[in-house]
Structures are given as C-alpha cells and as structure tokens.
Amino acid sequence: MNFETMISQMTGGMTETIGIFAWTLVFSLPFGLLIAFGRMSKYKWLSTIVKLYISIMRGTPLMLQLLVVFFGPYYLFRISMGGSWRFISIIIGFTLNYGAYFAEIFRSGIESMPIGQYEAAKLLGYSRIQTFFMIIFPQVIKRILPAMANEIITLVKDTSLAFSIAYMEMFTIAKQIAAANTTFVPFVIAAVFYYVFNLLVAGVIGLMEKKLNYYH
Amino acid sequence: MCVAVVGAMIPMGVLAEERTTFRVGFDAEYPPYGYMDENGEYVGFDLDLAQAVCDLQGWELVKVPINWDSKDMELNSGSIDCIWSGFTINGREDDYTWSVPYVDNSQVVVVSKASGIETLEDLSGKRVGVQAASAALQVLQDEEQQKDLADTFATLQEFGDYNSAFVELQAGSIDAIAMDVGVANYQLTNRDNGDDFMVLEESLNSEQYGIGFRLGDTELCDQVNAALEQLVEDGTVAELAEKYDLSDMVCLDEQFGEATTAEAAE
Image (cartoon, rainbow over all chains, first blue to last red):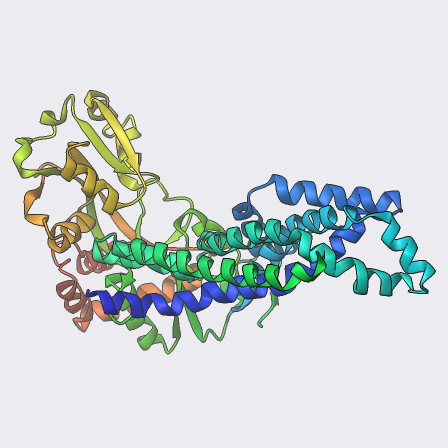
C-alpha cells in the first residue's frame, strides 16, 4: 500500500477524531462550569456530592469510564442500545471525565478573584449574575487559559482511547492499517497528525491570551 | 435509534424472528481473516464468507470491528450477533454456541532462517515471543499441551502486535515467535523481508476455528450452518479459500461430510 492510500484511509479517521474533540469541548466546558459552581456551593450536601463525583472521575482511568458508559445500559438495565450509541457514549464518557478536570480549573480561577471586586460591583449596582458574567468571568478566563491549554492538548491525545470501545477514530484505523500492511508508517502519520493538531490548538489559545491581555 | 428491552436471560436471537441484519463482530487487525484493504473496506476470508451467508439468507451484513478484549461484552450486550474472526473453539467449547468448525488451524513457531533452529527441541534455552492473550500463549501455558516445552525456553516474551514482534525477531532480541499458522503465512508473504523467516515443520498443536454465537442462540447458529453447507456445495467456500490462500486449512467440506454420516447413524 502506498503512502497516499494510507493518508486517504486515515483522513476519515481524522474527521472522527476531530469530532470527538470538538463535541467533548462543546459539552464539557459548560458542564465543568456547572460542576465548579456545585463544588463551591454553600449547601454542604451539594458540594460533598460534587466533590465525590470529581474524585471518582479523576481517580479512575478514562478508558474504564468509556467501557462503563458504553456497556452500562445493557449490564445495568438490560437495554440494548442501537447503532449511534457507540459515538454518543464516547461523547458522554469524555464529557463526564473532562468536565471534572475543567471544574477544578474553573474553581481555581474563580476563587483567585479578590473579594473587593464583588463589593465594588455591588456598590455600583450590578446584580450578582451581572457581576459574575461581566466582571469576574472574563478575568477568570484570562487566568485559567494556560491550565486549560494543558487539559485541551491532553484531550486531543486522549481521543485515541476511543479504541477501547472500537470506535473508528484515527488511531484505531492506524492500528488496523499497520496490521494489514505489516508496517509502522501509519503510526508516524498519526504522530504528525496529533502534533500538528496540537500546534493549532496551542496557537489558538495563544491568540486568546493575547486578546485577553487587556485585563492587565 | 433502535432500543430493544430484553429479559435478563433471553438471548436476543429468540426475539429477532424476522431478522433483517446480521451483525458480525471481528478483530480488524487479524489478516487474512479480517482486515482493512486498499480501499478502506473490511475484507478477509471470514468477512467474505459472512457476506456470502447473508446473500443466501437475505440479510444485510453489518461488519462491526470490535476490541478483542471486550468481545464477550459486545456479544452479550447485543451490539453484535456473533464473533466471526479466526476464533478458536478449543478451550472455549462451553462458553459459546458454536457453528460447525470451518478452519483447521495450528499454532506454529516462526524463526529466522539464519538461526539454525529446525525443531521444537532446538528452542531450548532460546527467547520465544508470543502475542498477549493469544491462543498460542494458552497452548504454551497449558500443562496438558506444551507447558513442558515452554519451560525449556530461556524466556517467554509477550508482545502486543506482530509488527513489533517481527522487528524484535529481526533484531535478534527474540529467537522465535509462536502464532497461528494462517497469520504466520500472511506475515511471511507480506513482509518485505519475509524470506528471511520460516515456519518450523513441527507445530505446537492443532485446533479449529468456529463462529461463536451467544450461548443458547441455536436458531441463528442453525441458519448460518445451513447456509455454510449450501456454500460448500456451490463451491463458494473453495473459491474464497483459494482467494485468501487458505485452501489447505478450510475444513468445511469434511464437516458436512461427517455431519451427514452422524445423522445417518442416528
């Protein structure tokens, strides 16, 4: 098999990889913020539950979590899920896991904001919601971007864990091509793809940081 | 999305009276039985045969690549109807409802021609590689089979995939690799330096491949068996065996020969 054929076969897998990455971000960022609020809640019962949730999500392997989400409906409720469940369960698994990590990053940012800003905003007549979304949150984003970049870059590479439930993302396909053609070349292509993808991600986050320099 | 609620112990096949699809679970890293071809299509002896069965029965074939480690979960949860992927019956007789055996397989040892190793005895004191969780490893660990032989090895090195194993063999960090004969032939034919290696004449064991259905799913199993019998008669099986260079190993014609004799005896 020549090089071009390999690339063209892997292109389909790259689309799937980017799909996992994008959908996970779309769902796990807002979900993570929600979890962060729960974690900081003044209600003890809520913050305890959320703490336990974060602890489990961070303390067990993502690969195992994907297996649980995918096979769980059958083993717990005897429900056989249909065709698109393989993809949906991956997005659910990644969102639950990454939401927990993002939550802690959001919390670190939110808790680092000085109390004086809340008091000043209150004096100026801002409501609590206005204070958070117009004054606090933009500064939080600025502060947590480097930590976020770490996590998002890890997400790009973690998409390959979808192989554990046989989802045909790029790395799974690379392994299949390598086996059928007795060659390591697909892995080199995969490495280059991940690296370029992460260069782009790091570049975009770098641009965002520049934009937010306004806050200093 | 099709959501079917089934009772705890009822196999799905019992409910699926008007079957329209046939979902085959296979390992897509297992040439020549199932793998990805130049066009990105999943092909192989097993998948082509499954296609022929579906054409006969009027089913739509759905090829589901699975992760080999979770094959039982895939089967039990109903995301596949059977495991059809160079699947060894021996040692798993009671775990699945098996089709008739369709391939006579054996576990063999591949060595470098230059190594001077010619018999299994020559492997004494050598470093032997074997794929993790493979049938070959099972044979080498079973006291009733080849554990005595394995005990003479210097080490039994487990590895993940055949590419790495062959690179190690070439580099001399291992002296031999134990694997399925079909896989061995594929590797030796398709590797650039395949001529440097050879398969030892003595094999480690002989075993058979079958199609594994959910335990108790005899209805589907019978339908597939019946289709296989027809495909033997019309020559399709022989044709596919020829195509994948497995003619020496495919044993379906004998199977149905024996089955008919057994029925006659009853």
